[in-house]
Amino acid sequence: MLNVLMLGVGQCGNRILDAINKEAFGGASRLSKYYSRQKFPSRVETIAINTAINDLKELRFTTAKDRLHVPNLHGVGANRNVGKQGFWDNREMIMEEIEKRGDFDVAFVMTSTSGGTGSSFSPLLIHELKERYKNISVIPIAVLPFREEGSIYLQNAAFSLRELMEVDAEGLILADNQYLKRCSGDIATAYDKINTMIAQRTLFLIESLDSEMLSVTDLGDFKTVMSGGLRMGTMGFSQADRKNPSVKSAIQNSLKPGSLLYPANVYDEAARAMVIIQGSREYLDVDEITKEIEKLCAGAGHVFKGLVIKKGYPKVLTLFTLASVPEIETLYAQAARAIHEEKDRKQRAKKQLSDAFAHIEDLEEIY
Ligand SMILES: Nc1nc2c(ncn2[C@@H]2O[C@H](COP(=O)(O)OP(=O)(O)OP(=O)(O)O)[C@@H](O)[C@H]2O)c(=O)[nH]1
Ligand SMILES: [Mg+2]
Image (cartoon, rainbow, N blue to C red):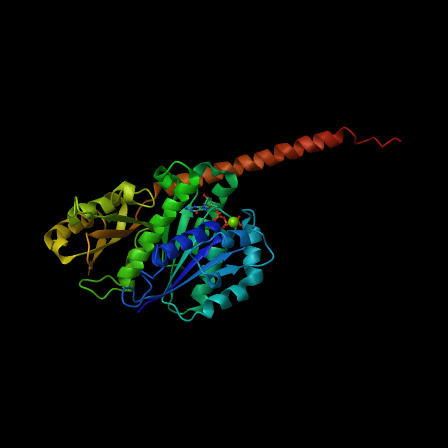
């Protein structure tokens, strides 16, 4: 049995965590679909952490005991320095809240890279988890901003992503708001859809890491995949249906750009991968599966395969790390430009004000 910790930090992280709790517990019955013992052997603990109490109040599927408000702040207004100080001031309280829930084998830390709270807390939090839990594997799930959200979000993304890579985590899973924007027209619906996509994939992953059926992929395989290439990767997912129950197309679809959380050409750019297939035995044609995996193997160095027999049409999750991330480099170039522009803007403004003050330099008030 795996002991799993899921932390959602800052507003974006909180909402993704809420989507996970919705998928797991929600729906009409509120019966636990994943967390119940028979169907989902793992013990899963979830905690939403935020400096803004209003963000926590907004959650609908996360219980009150799973919401941790870090006091004396009302959000940090995208300022990562204020965020870091907030974490240090409250470190013991936060870690105690986590530690009282027992031991963990694996932790997922979900956050936006671009806001203030989640992006500054998460690297520090991961560092603390690694210090305090000897054998824990920690995987950040990091959300990249819409590129037009402004210069502070861009710079935050650049610096926090670097911190997340430098802290001793087991790789990093990327989700890109900009890339996923096509999901929907208005922003609230887009957020919901993106969060649900992340939630679905993450739950599927946990479920299959802890499954005891047929050919399995375990935490060790997962860590090997995450340590491949640049140690940054993402997930794809696809679900077959009655019209097309073929496992072959389900695998292919899970690798298509439209199924991924971050833009990548998996066949060319993947360093390592894990393909997890779930479905009724009658649909899991071993020859077809082998052929598809071999195709992926031609580009990616190593591909782990997991098969889980479970009633229904095939569902496929692909998790992979990447050997190249051009989109990230573009993001850093954009962030650098934004920082320069911000600097210039500040200097110009400062100059204008000092020019204005210069007008009264030798004067006094006369009444
Ligand atoms: N996918 C997704 N992205 C979100 C969501 N909410 C906010 N974001 C993105 O997250 C970034 C802003 O970060 P937040 O998580 O809101 O910031 P925070 O950690 O709460 O930090 P502060 O508000 O500055 O204290 C922006 O790039 C948003 O586009 C969400 O529900 N889903
Ligand atoms: Mg916030």
